[in-house]
Image (cartoon, rainbow, N blue to C red; front, side):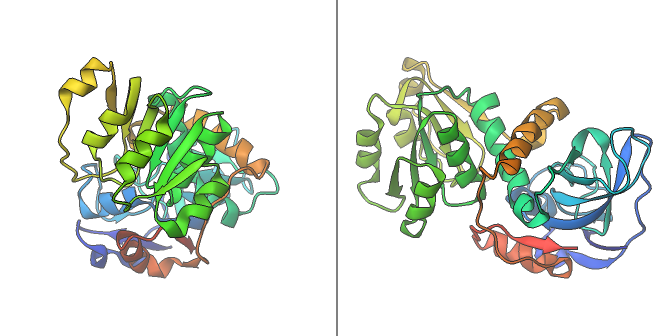
Length: 320
């Protein structure tokens, strides 16, 4: 089979596109014929070695897939079933950027009827990440005020959509070119992240402060964030691999506030399945939207990684 894989960590130039053996599924795996995949920031971290995880070489890259069951000894999956996964390419699991993938049965989900791959693929990782960050880690409740920084990208816009759908009041920061998009996703107020008066505008927009603050941009201005939190407010750290912000400890603890780290890679299979149920519901009811580029061939995986690292906000899809 053709696959995009690495034999060492490094820049996108280490990605090879060549033949590898079709994987042999274990007794609890399902062999999936892959149709479409998408690129995530975490994929680039695993490829570069920035995210320390097992990558037995040759290591197929990629987190997400939409495809069709080609073979299964697991009762709930049958050949021909349309399926998806969003947690491959990590902790020793070979990735999705190949013609076939052996997917653990508890990391594989049925694709709802009537939902095509091009609609689903851009949302599998982003929506599941948003759900777990907001509700499992962020303990979001209806009526709370949420700040989503870096709201124009895939995860950012999914955070806005799910928070708004849950009855939260959403304030967002992004580039002015993304204002309309973020408002479409459900943001009540949107501000330019480069505005020199941003801190003042954010404080004015918060009323009694932010109950939840998620900086998806990776900048992590904790001086501003902690000052703007409500009593008991939570900051969720889910981006900014190399950020080293200063933390105003006094203002944090006197508010009973907290900073909580979150990475979807650490989620249990039960938590991923819970997120998958919500994602499937929103896909089947057409209540999730994304901005995705026209799909490109899997042979261009290295270029797709370059575009992601250059700051692409629209989702990058590849056909297999």
